[in-house]
Image (cartoon, rainbow, N blue to C red):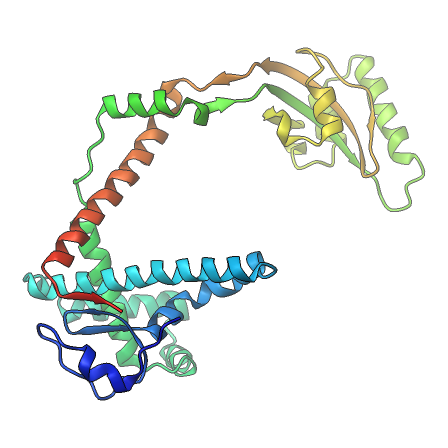
Length: 321
């Protein structure tokens, strides 16, 4: 990866409002007006993702490097947007809308919430991270500014018409397909270590009680060791993919009102009853309208945010390296 050393900084920072900084010792990734984004800043911003990427792609070094590079580029854009927004805040007359007293109150609320109002412990944590309180407060203020500016430039900006929702529904029907489903009740009897057929015998006794007219719900409430015991073994509507194969195959062969026999597996014995069946279908628009609206609002919000950032880029000196 290309690095730009400090010796070249003076020549690079040529542009409107840019002054060379003698204290810069890191390579430069981008300049926004008179603010510098360094390789180290991008690396620090990306650091929380590195182990996650390594665990996923560690055995594929080329793919790991590719994914890491993509993450760094994404984070560079986030840092660049941050500087654009902070500059817009300072130059557009918003400064007075966020007095220091508000920031101080928010910082105190943060310490109270995260450190039980123990300021000494908070300061020691900052020292362990190599930060001063002044640095923390500055970063905290910047986070608040960015959040509020993003909110202000998105508030009431995204409007989704009923027609857009209907078009999305028609174009994405596969997204709302539901597999065959059964409304299932199940009694689960876990096998203890060294089980010598005791669990199977108990399952047979429960089956005999059911055959004699016992209520499945009552038997499940008394005997089941599954997490749905308190609901009378009610699993609700389930799709075939939710169940292990031997249970799924049998459950979906039963008709409404039918019960299974004892299903014996290495880990447990099961008894099942299917209450209802529902064939494969597409959810009606009325069931997914709110979901679609949220999706479209998120998309429109992202589009408006990008437009705003592009406007900021056009009126600000921005240079990548």
